[in-house]
Image 1 (cartoon, helix red, strand yellow):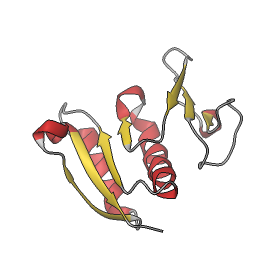
Image 2 (cartoon, rainbow, N blue to C red):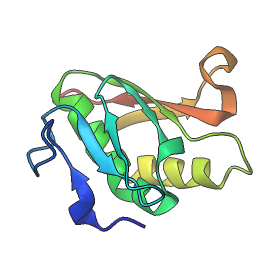
Image 3 (cartoon, one colour):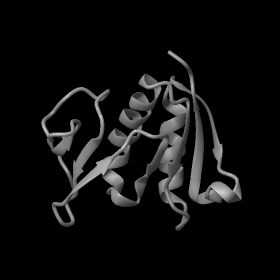
Image 4 (cartoon, rainbow, N blue to C red):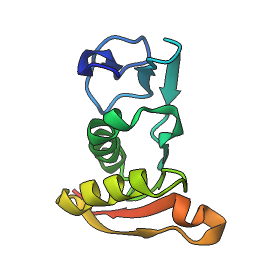
Length: 119
């Protein structure tokens, strides 16, 4: 599990403001950095479940800052536990206008589509 200080938000890996690209996260599994572009799709497969509570709001804030108001969060199908966690988190965020399960061509119940409120 990653402590918050391992979240890096800058191309050079130094701690910086969330509005910079890409987000780089050190993975506990192999310590290899994972570059995460702010492009409107967040795939949670590369992250540990404990990281979701911090990662999702920060990613949505970065998208919103760039005017990306439609976001797809890929959480996988599995038994639905991560989907439930993501939906519970989204329901508490004031910047989220709405969210729904993605249509089949966008991942079906393995992904959630999020509409963000503009600034």
